[in-house]
Amino acid sequence: MATTTAAAYGALIASLLLLLVAGAAADDGAALLEVKKSFRNVGNVLYDWSGDDHCSWRGVLCDNVTFAVAALNLSGLNLEGEISPAVGALKSLVSIDLKSNGLTGQIPDEIGDCSSIKTLDLSFNNLDGDIPFSVSKLKHLETLILKNNQLVGAIPSTLSQLPNLKTLDLAQNKLSGEIPRLIYWNEVLQYLGLRGNQLEGILSPDMCQLTGLWYFDVKNNSLTGEIPDTIGNCTSFQVLDLSYNRLTGSIPFNIGFLQVATLSLQGNKFTGPIPSVIGLMQALAVLDLSYNQLSGPIPSILGNLTYTEKLYMQGNRLTGTIPPELGNMSTLHYLELNDNQLTGSIPSELGKLTGLYDLNLANNSLEGPIPNNISSCVNLNSLMPMATS
Ligand SMILES: *[C@@H]1O[C@H](CO)[C@@H](O)[C@H](O)[C@H]1NC(C)=O
Ligand SMILES: *[C@@H]1O[C@H](CO)[C@@H](O)[C@H](O)[C@H]1NC(C)=O
Ligand SMILES: *[C@@H]1O[C@H](CO)[C@@H](O)[C@H](O)[C@H]1NC(C)=O
Ligand SMILES: *[C@@H]1O[C@H](CO)[C@@H](O)[C@H](O)[C@H]1NC(C)=O
Ligand SMILES: *[C@@H]1O[C@H](CO)[C@@H](O)[C@H](O)[C@H]1NC(C)=O
Ligand SMILES: *[C@@H]1O[C@H](CO)[C@@H](O)[C@H](O)[C@H]1NC(C)=O
Ligand SMILES: *[C@@H]1O[C@H](CO)[C@@H](O)[C@H](O)[C@H]1NC(C)=O
Ligand SMILES: *[C@@H]1O[C@H](CO)[C@@H](O)[C@H](O)[C@H]1NC(C)=O
Image 1 (tube, rainbow, N blue to C red):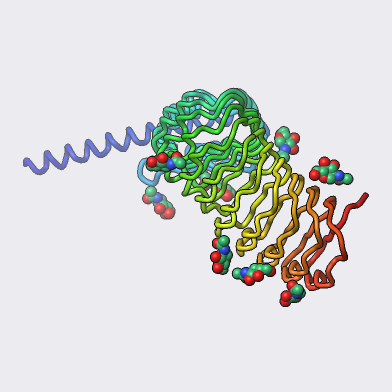
Image 2: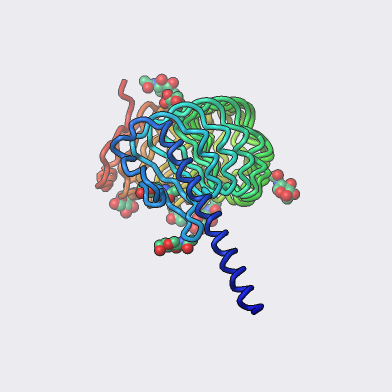
């Protein structure tokens, strides 16, 4: 008797749960139809968004058990129109991918109600307005990609409160103000992409607080001041791109502690000599120091960078001779030393660089013949040895 009652209760509870689940799922269907309403240009791509079974609609992925919408992927469908606030009703969403459409308008505040979300990718649209503060409520957020939109305003410092944020890519927008210093205290952040905005202020000495950050790109902003001495603690960096800002001062000696593969400092206002310690950065594949105001000689120890494929030092005030040691850079493909004040003759050791595609030595004060040996550089596409004037 007792067991039958228990079984009956069990069945009742099960069917109640099923009803609840079905109810929630039906709500998700209604929310999706609201979301569809604010898109334009849906005729060809969201034609199957009708009927009861929203889990079978294009771009919709449901949880196998609850049938709630877990992922929405409408990337690259030429969608226009706006992102509806109704998206906030999809409480079980783990991932939203709307990249590469023509969406306009603002990111709705209600996005902050999608409390389960881990991945939000709205990149390559025409979204404008601010980054809503409500994003900071998304405690499970791991990946936030908003690059290539028209977003304005400041980077909310509350983004630093996202305990799981690993990837923050806000590149190619119109963001202004300073990079919030608190960002650097987020312990899990690995990727910080801020290229192509209008960010101002200095590089914080806190930028190397994080042990996990490997990608740091602030190219093409309006940052000022010097590279902080603490840069020597950025030992996890693999890519450091500070190019095309208004940074000044000399390149700190501490930079030699980094084991980056890419070091891009071009297009700033750096002065002083190229520190020899750069020759110890054995992992360097790309070293770009071009278009600064660097002076003094090219350190011969750079010849020890045997993994470097691209060495750009053009457009500075470098003096002295071209070190023959550069002929030891056996994987070099690009060597650009033009627009400096280099003297002496072209070392024939450069003939050892058989992988060279491009060699530009123009607009220096070099003299003597082009060594016959350069003809060993069988891959050379472009050779600009002397001044064109
Ligand atoms: C849902 O089902 C699909 C297809 O059978 C399977 O690949 C996926 O792992 C399942 N997901 C969960 C959360 O069980
Ligand atoms: C969305 O779909 C595209 C195309 O199938 C795929 O490349 C992309 O990885 C998907 N996005 C997510 C977040 O899974
Ligand atoms: C910097 O950004 C501006 C505006 O987006 C663009 O026109 C310019 O080409 C960019 N410069 C570099 C070096 O990327
Ligand atoms: C690097 O970090 C250590 C430990 O946090 C600290 O003692 C040291 O002063 C830092 N070095 C620089 C150059 O900031
Ligand atoms: C350059 O590399 C060679 C061979 O690996 C090494 O013997 C030499 O000490 C290095 N030079 C410097 C200044 O580290
Ligand atoms: C590098 O080049 C210089 C001059 O060409 C040469 O004397 C030296 O032995 C080379 N070092 C290595 C490690 O190959
Ligand atoms: C030569 O290089 C200097 C920079 O070192 C530059 O200012 C000048 O315009 C260049 N001249 C030519 C003809 O390109
Ligand atoms: C000329 O180039 C060859 C490689 O093709 C190299 O072995 C030789 O050392 C070079 N000569 C000089 C003087 O550097």
